[in-house]
Length: 197
Length: 136
Image 1 (cartoon, rainbow over the protein chains, first blue to last red):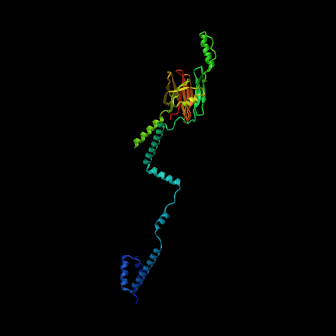
Image 2 (cartoon, rainbow over the protein chains, first blue to last red):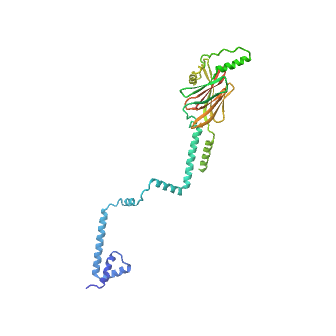
């Protein structure tokens, strides 16, 4: 003969096996199982089925390779890479926001190093200041002595030679004037010595 | 650290603020037409001047390194006079200088190659030459 209470407790048997009942319901179901063999057999069936299910899932899980599971998950959740300009902008923004003091100090230090190096080069004359021209180039020549005239020569080695050559006519004129003052005869044309201009 | 940075900046500013200077080597050479001795190192000068005068002896009277600037730098000559050398300007790293001797003056641009040979007067029967070149 069937236990009339079984009809009430039958819907609770599966949740009981799955541990989904409240403590009061669980105690009531356990008292019912102890008194009703059919319900106890059904609970045993449920437990066996649950064990088989768990076992089959564990076997399926064992067949899978989870060695790189974490990396694959992280690769999927990594945000999309920003363009280079955006990344630089973001980096600079963060640096200026959180490391402003360090940046200013580093910038000042770098500028000081550069200026010092440039000053050292300038002081040592390493730049050969003023000698960018390929060769010496005479621009102007002026003489204050009327008896001489300048003669500028250039060599193929880049030299410039400025001779102060005695102007024959001017010198003679000056000499004649001096002789007239002294009441002397005019001097004959001076001939150049050998080897002179 | 901050003190060092400030000191470096001050030093650099001072260096760059100073007037530009150009270094020049100035030699004074006495040349005679009569045969004599040519000092070692002056053979090239003798050859270069040979297109004007065939000097038989060349003697170095003095050599000095000048730091040219706007104010004239005198180079003493043994005849009691002097040659004044001054820096007119430096444009694009090319120095324009003025050389003033008793008989006149000349302006010229310095060059990497070559020297300036400027006849600068007479002494003891010979010719005095001022030679300006880039210091080595």
